[in-house]
Amino acid sequence: MQATADYKILYEQQLKITAELACQIEVLKHQLAQFQKMIFGSKHERFEAADPDHLLGKSSVQLSLGLDVDTIAICKITEATAVKYIRTKTEVTPGKPHPGRTALPEHLRRETTILQPDTDVTGLKKIGDDVTEILDFIPGELYVKQYIRPKYVAPLSEVKDTIITASLPARLMEKCMFGEGLLAQIVVDKYCDHLPLYRQMQRFKRAGVEIAQSTMNSVMTRTLNSLFSLYEAHKRLVLASRYLHVDETGIKVLDEKKKGSTHNGFYWVYHNSKDKMVLFDYQPGRGREGPDDILKDYQGYLQTDGYVVYEDFENRTGIQVLNCMAHARRKFVDAQKNDMARAQHALVLFQKVYQTERTIKDDELSGEALLQLRQKEAVPVLKELEKWMIEEYPKVVPSSAIAQAIKYCLPRWKKLSLYTTDAALLIDNNPVENAIRPVAIGRKNYLFAGSHESAQRSAMIYSLFATCRMNNINPYEWLKDVLERMHLYTTANIRELLPQFWKKPKL
Image 1: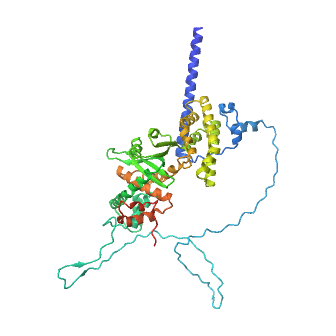
Image 2: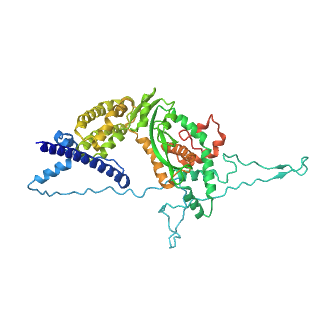
Image 3: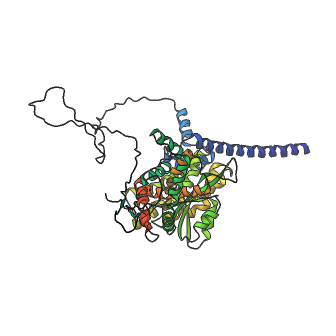
């Protein structure tokens, strides 16, 4: 009897170990799938339920077993004994006539060539023209802006050697050999079109102009340094907002203290979608010190993801934290391979919530009308989803992906639903994530920042260019004008040059 009991205990222990190993395998498989998706997979999170009504009506047995809609459909097809073929007639509707080639913009310079027929047209009556337009391109031109200042001296002047000549036009960067147009183009090429300086130098060389690396680095540094007073004015305006989206993204930085390796720095991004302003702030780390310092006097709404650093702001007077619904939804997108039935059940409800936001956008609702629609359509769905998660969490394996998705959402559900209480608030943090995307493309090209100071200068110009993009302003035209006129402004009125206030000069 004792031996039997011992074997029973060993058997139960082995079952427990096997179950734990199976859970670990599922977790590792999920992690591997996430890494493979990051490297090779599509980044979109589009979800289309084949039969959402059927999915929502599934029994708790189906949910607990983890059977998905496709599995159930396959079972039903297997049980069928006969297939009836139906012949259908397809009618082809004639398509709309092609509208023709898109007209080329009127503001482009036209280079006209008139082609006469080979035959003699003497005495013939002209009845019109056939006009064919081809869009062509001439590589950007480097040219020399030359100032010639005649020098004069009075022959009978009482003061000998008195020479009279005109003064050079005032400039922001005195004695710089590059004009404002070229400076603006170099900066735009790097931070908007992600072209590193060495590639720009190669392009200039093809045009017959060799520029030294030291010269390129020097003019880039001087140009960005000259914009810091503008950046500080911009920072004050952004931090005076009453609603900010916040996110962070990494940037590798060369550090003289780390020979042979780079330092992992971070851009902390603060986004005001209402007033169309973006602020990038560089910090050497991802700790709470960065946002704690820059937001020490902030008052208003702060929308974030679930990163633990942001939890500090929940206890600050005057700050109300709300979370991003897109991050919550993303957890269930990632959990589909782990538990298709539960994940898709949640995604269908998320889809209904986002459909309300699409209606708001399409109908251009605001104020009280927007709030009423959210209260009528979104709030009941959010309550249903919360109740479902509370009921399902005890039924799933704690270490599974679906459990982690529910575990992420439930403690944050009040902050995730807060957007329904104020018409000014948005459902997610997508605006700030969109502002970060150019940085992700740029660092794949220039790889790293040369120093912590260089990273902060990059944060400055990213702030101003992202604000240009939000306000539909051509960054080259804006920067060239700022470099030409900034020396005429003082601290009191320099904000007039910020992209959100800038007016294109009349020619």
